[in-house]
Length: 258
Image (cartoon, rainbow, N blue to C red; front, side, top):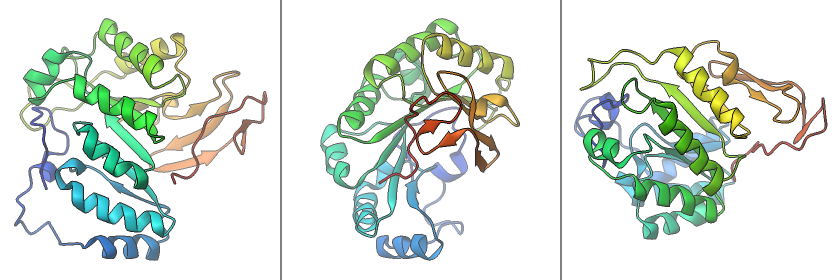
């Protein structure tokens, strides 16, 4: 349990800063985790909320067993991982969902106690190693919400990870040690979304917002609704396999993480 960042705005601090001996925690051996996933009918195992690089060996052991059983594997991470460790995970890891918390080193140093470049390096390496990569940016008013910074981040993703990379822009709410800032206005997120589309990012999304049209997946060619999302539910619409039924555009969608 724990995290190698110390983000003042941590949205999951009840988990990442939990007492290792606390009542909310239960031991789970890697093999037991895989058995439970199979028994529940799950298609994949995801290491999330707590930072998985903290227990690298545990995730590696469970992921290796999971892959052997045909389960997908997903790493939800801040991306602060060495090249050696990421390469060790690569044979068993299907998806790398990485936080790009900001696009300035100043933010990373002051707010997270870390550096930006290692995160960018790991995201790029994960892509090179064949993992499916998605990014998430928590947009915080007054800290990383300028259009100049967000445009720079979007351009970097397009250039280094590809225009098909899903980018999620999520709303901040006051939490942990950052209670003095208001929640992110939906209008700010929608402005960033439109800028991403303008820059030819094919699959931007908004997160931590309720019943917003930009949670959905749209065809980048004709804008037909491909996947409709509400909360944790999703419904396929104008999509047949990996093709838009409205215009025939090939859609780079991952239905199952291997």
